[in-house]
Length: 410
Ligand code: PMP
Image (cartoon, rainbow, N blue to C red; front, side, top):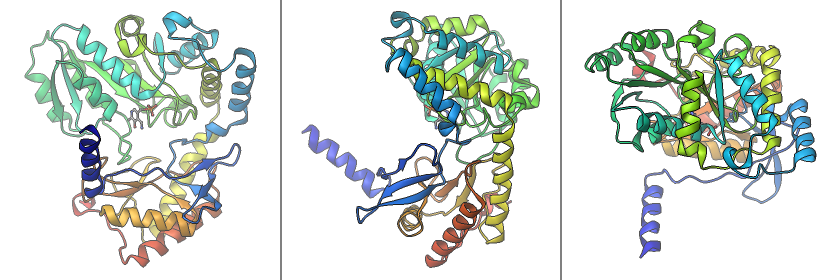
């Protein structure tokens, strides 16, 4: 009975074109963005990765690798338990101090994943605060949504980046009722940036706590790579800044930063923090080395932004428009059809050695299926030329040169 039911559910997914297939992609140390792919013929061949969240190539940085190797040799593979049971390794304390300093906050708390940090923190605050209401941007990440949905707190969704809508929702609430405004700085599928200053201003006027996910910004924007809020000079007014160490930092793990009391409350009450094993010391050491590097080195950020501009221009010259919503290193190229997106991706991989994952519904709305391209400091000029040529050839074969949607072009 169970097998039958689940098979039916999987079949539904397939029929909707939403069944996810893993692609054989084997990264190699020091070679990023090259990877090895075993294709339909089973033979390994080199491909170039264009859709990784290893935005700055830090997963391959020699200092990060050395820190990880050393810590494995010194401390072994695992952490031995949750922070409360296994204890806190000195690397943890150093990393959390460094993260708090990065964002100009009193304290930081590290979680095994960015997903877990959003989920656990929001769930915790919404359960611990008395009768709170959460106001969430409609495009917030699944981890934020899940944290909210796992509570009974009243919730309202504001239209994406619509500050007036947010203000109307907040104004309906009693002044003394606890409120949390949850939003992101860079939205990962459109590459657009939230009006952080305005959101923070409205939230403060209505006595609401602000929770900002800077997962797609930290390391890449703002002074010392501290994020978009820091770049706007408003990080101090955001109550909680959340980040990941799996993207620009290049390793794994999530974190929150905020006042000592807020962070201590999450540390003390969040079951998603208390009841899970902490990251291995080697991971924490690698994260710390990467964060320290990104705080002081401008080279990776400079190369990221330079190459992003270069790729944008090269795509445009070839008649391939990046969706105009993007103001960042995330370059979405509209395909507009799930099947076409999948078939194009397969051709790009098998024939051109270009790895781009199709982004289909439900991750993005039907009709806005796309490729989400990320160039990194590690991509060469030749890589860029090859990508643009490959996309041009594949789109031409399918007789579909993607155009921005009318609404987005407006
Ligand atoms: N927030 C956002 C906006 C994300 O896009 C993601 C992951 N893609 C996460 C949180 C979760 O981060 P992690 O991958 O570290 O779990």
